Image 1 (tube, rainbow, N blue to C red):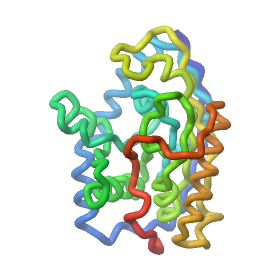
Image 2 (image 1 turned 60 degrees about the vertical axis):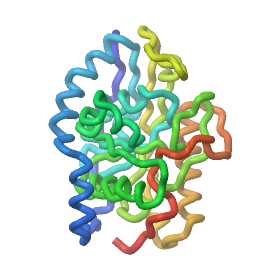
Image 3 (image 1 turned 90 degrees about the horizontal axis):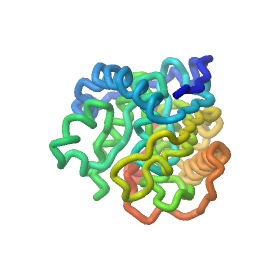
Image 4 (image 1 turned 30 degrees about the vertical axis):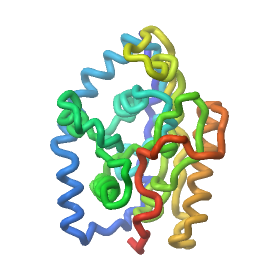
Length: 267
């Protein structure tokens, strides 16, 4: 099956004024959360991408909006387990994603998912979730891509839900862009509660125009700023996917970066 891909790429969206983290303990924790990610993910992409192309009709749009170097936060809608697979395979660069800590309880995924770039997050919140924030910040400070689902959990009805502000918090703190990502078709490939995916269907991944945090930076640590930036993100995702939007949070506990625990300080 053929894959339609735009290959023209841009660079340099991020603010290069990011200072190295002065918390060596936090950096150590973050590094430990991602053992051997780079090599494992590059090898996986070489295998997974041709497999996806053979099993489904994949169309990629707007890849030029993903910078070829430097940090950026990719924020897709979340309608299927396969969302992370398609995003990782076609983003074209190393990317680390937040994933639920329950994956660490299974021998099948305990070592595989972190090696492929998953940052486990404990949905109990508080200090148990703070490690994910540390790891995500360290990924971005290394100049890599970080992926997070702003809805916080999978949409079981296919609608788009209100976004959590964790991605905006990181973008404002580090001065890096948010790339909205619209994924269409993965819910049909693997409907809710179905174990086996359906082959031969269409999947489209759209990378939208970057949302730059610079126009928000002067307003500082204001929750309304983060809310406005997140609402802009969700509007852009809706434009990419055509999903019906619900201005309420998804009902399950969020698999997302904490929105209230961390305080933004000057970079």
